[in-house]
Length: 454
Ligand code: HEM
Image 1 (cartoon, rainbow, N blue to C red):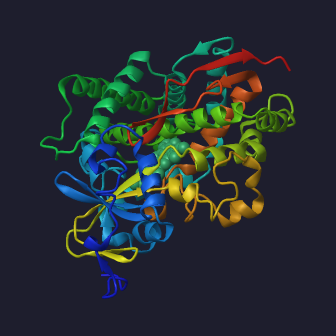
Image 2: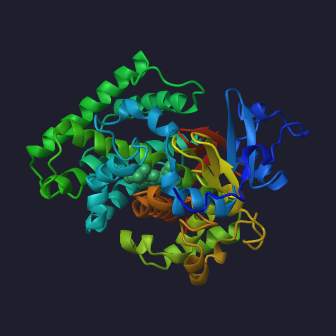
Image 3: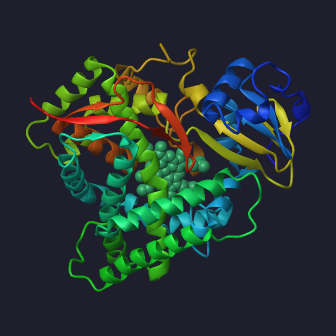
């Protein structure tokens, strides 16, 4: 037990609660109406950054206070565990459970250490695979020139799936494989939002069949790689085989496939929000375009990912519209834990949010404005991703394990779009935010990719 669990702490009953206040009924706030992160932000500002809401069957503690979040995710993380998403994702996990689906502890650490992506990112793999990702992005973006999309996010998600397929398996799958993946992700999203415990670790019939087809496609790619004609390919699969990965075909196929879940939803949201925010300001858009053009003709993947103006715009989009805005954690079952000034009973559900920290006027100057130029070298050093006031990739030991790859993909996608088209994304409308697969995703976002005349 950690030493902070001591007498002066207050009880859960002392925690402020919106109940009875003339805002909205507690329950309705989280069923429909406002996006849940906006409700959290409002409660944090109006009631307090640690509060309690009564939902049917249980209380939920809402935590937006940066110090309390540090306790939960960093300093006292062993007092808490990941319960909800891990149970929801079990139908696509491996028998032993993978990094996503392990609640924490020794087995999670063991699965993480053996994860092909973790191992590859410790070496030089990312630098080798980025040129291929850049070429795949360029090809897709060229096909968009002159087009208008009413559901921009769907196009971005499809591009990310295809680019990740080549990055993970060294191959492109049929469109049907992507459609199947979306069907499975939809079913998992329903499980993640479910208010009742799961009786089964399997998916409904249609999604189950889509998952079987996906798994067969991914396993086939593994078999092909084993018998390979191009064993030097830069993809993660061939890298892993070359470096002695001893997973069997099914395990390897699943571990790689789960990187789609981890990566493409949140990365696509960030590509969309960065373009959307840049398109609202001619000055900011021009600043990034000029910096990209200054890299010379056909800049390398490395040059684009190092472009500071582009990086600043992406960081600012991650601050204002983080794709992951909410986390769930539970207090461990055996003893109560400290959350801020309170002692919270075993198994209590916590909902953690980052929007209060990311938009806090005491910490960020002109906090609600899109100002990429705030990301000076000093700010990057004082508030890096994973710090108390800026954590789009999470905090502590469960921080995103592919943060650098996710950022590189976003830089390449946004950079390539800005270099090759004159995008109009969102067309000055307020962005509509949906909650899908644990992420904020932009809904009904309209875009035009005009030819670039410069
Ligand atoms: C903008 C892009 C991304 C964002 C915002 C993001 C965000 C996050 C966050 C917040 C977590 C922590 C979850 C928690 O604490 O409960 C996480 C975990 C994870 N992410 Fe990412 N991610 C991104 C891109 C990626 C990419 C590209 C991949 C893989 C290719 C990836 C793979 C993972 C995995 C495997 C975990 C689980 C780590 C663990 O539980 O040990 N993510 N991500």
